[in-house]
Amino acid sequence: MNIFNTNFDYQSRLNKIRKLMDEREIDVMLVHFWPNQYYISGMFQPLPWYPVENNKHTEMPLIIFRDRMEDPIFLITWLTGNGLKEGTWIKDVRLVDKEPFGKYSWQEYLAEILKEKRVNSGTIGIEEHVCTISTFNKLKSAAPKARFQGIDDIFQIARMIKEPEEIELIKESVLIAEASLKAGMETSGVGVLESEINFAAETEAKRRGAIREVETMCQSGIRTSHHRAMASNWKRVDKNDLVMIDIGLVYKGYGSDLTRTWVEGKPTDKQKKITDDLVRAHGKVLDNIRPGVKIWDVLDSGDNELKKEGYITGAPLPSNSIGVGHVGIHGIGLGPMHDPPHVMEHRETKLEVGMTLAVSGTARFEDFTIRFEDDVVVVQGGYELINKLIPWEL
Image (tube, rainbow, N blue to C red; front, side, top):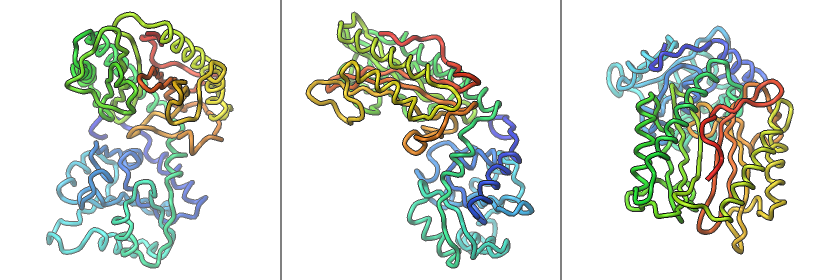
């Protein structure tokens, strides 16, 4: 049991991780990244947490041993200790500042544990994408004879295919996100501040039991051309403005990611054509989502459709007023933003039943962007579209 009142088969997850440790001959893993800690332990830490906030209360790891006879150990300070005990099934929770306060550093406690479990000179796995240099130096001081090896891919592989219980939570997260997106669209209008639209969307999310994953992006007019811009409290929607909301929510630890663009007024013929092009490319992508197809081949099917219409693909910025068109895919799940599979890292990965994906279509110009995004789950023979209420239209 944890803060969300969810209960997963943690032993099965631990066995999956240990099997991957066997294949790589990793003796012990030090887990710092909070989604990975949550996946294994049930303890959820919302942002800011390590590495965004890096101090003695957040820096200490969850320790996983390859030896099946050794239970995982959580190192923690008293400040967060009670919350950890409330949220995890792991019994061995060691408070490094219990008594006397500050006698040893956490890495000195870690050194004693590694010696106790006879892995201090073995191979230690760390999350290279997360572990800061200062933390890594502390780890090396705790185990100077050890070999350190990156293990980010272990959790990526383990988390890529979702359990049925995870899929149900993701579906609920998506449905809340769609309702929140609808609330923002209904609040929008000529003269309305972007921040008011943003507030309406996030208030609906809160009302339904979700929190935002990152700051909701709400932009209008020329601001739609910005990448990852927050809603302003000074820009009001003008007549015939494009308005775009990109909302990512977390419900009981699991995320969603939806985007819609619309016009407050009458869309131009150019905007209509762009939307039609994106809808057609989106359809090509969905047609190719099924078990056994490589992720990169799915992306190519959408980008090739956009190339036929003259869009540049693969370019970071618009050039000579020609739009940059792209179809994107990324995993959704624990986050904090994108869950496995990550397209650039897993381009050769074949889709499998149980993968949950966000599928987006974007046409970016120097002075505006039109963008849409849906969430799907891969099923036998194809896909299931999770969100169904708001079509891709201006």
